[in-house]
Image 1 (cartoon, rainbow, N blue to C red):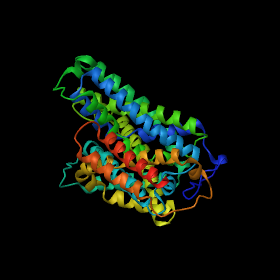
Image 2: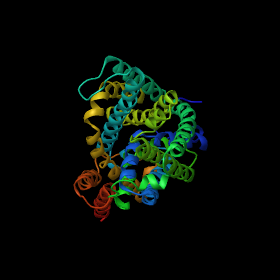
Image 3: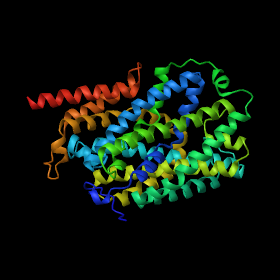
Image 4: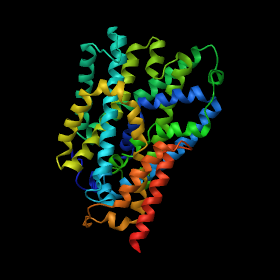
Length: 413
């Protein structure tokens, strides 16, 4: 099996992966601990019926968005960054590549701290605050950073192995713990959900569901380019994102309403399952982090011209060194950045279908910058962050789409 990651070219047919492998990779990608935080907020603001409807509505929109990107990635065989070059231009693509790289590197660092800090507290009894972290905690961050960077360094083959191990274990152990928590409670699921303020609308809840993984979902082509064909990639992506993200939201909600936390780790601790808790937390974060730093490596490689492997090492080092600081200071900023990536994805989707023949051509003529694509991302991001109505990511995508399509029509005339 080849170790080539084709960061500079289309993935040829003979190097495509099996449907099961793609499903495992995409499921592992969605096993994102920060999605559990969204589950906690959903449980606080919605009753059980509203929670389910928010997941269905938000999951459907998220699935449609990632499914379209998954289809494009598989049909073209191109990474997000190579697609960006053909839609945004050679230099224009630096904007989306930098945005995805910066955001995914940030989440990589946050993920390391999300593992190290709770384990350091529980395993070693350390006192960890925003102002102080004992050296043993930093040692855990370093060890996790080395392991997760290594899996991304060895490329799609290594990501496949990690996903095959982690996805079944996290799904099974997490679900068992969730069921045990519900059975051990004083009241049933519906009754527990009914407690609290319940001041969130279903639309707002759907926005939380979409926002929980829409930034990561923008990198979907980086993985689906290894799929057999576009139709298969779209189906697998929609199923994986809907199932995986929903599971994370349930883990966060159950943790919130039964033990007052925001992570299945805390549920398992409450059930005296410490070692299983560490295993699930570590594998859960690993599956997302290796995909995140892999995407970062591809993005930085596209900008700098250096190899993907060297950029994975550089970004893994930066993410590891900055992990604790990122965890305490940067989550809010990363959530702001989440609103900036959906405009990138929607422009890639529209650009592909409006200009499919040129994009699929192997000898496509390069151009420097598509300024309407760049303007769509910038204005879309501003609207998504400043317009406090509806769903932020949808607002950003709609704005970007209007600007980009208008620009294409003007250029054709």
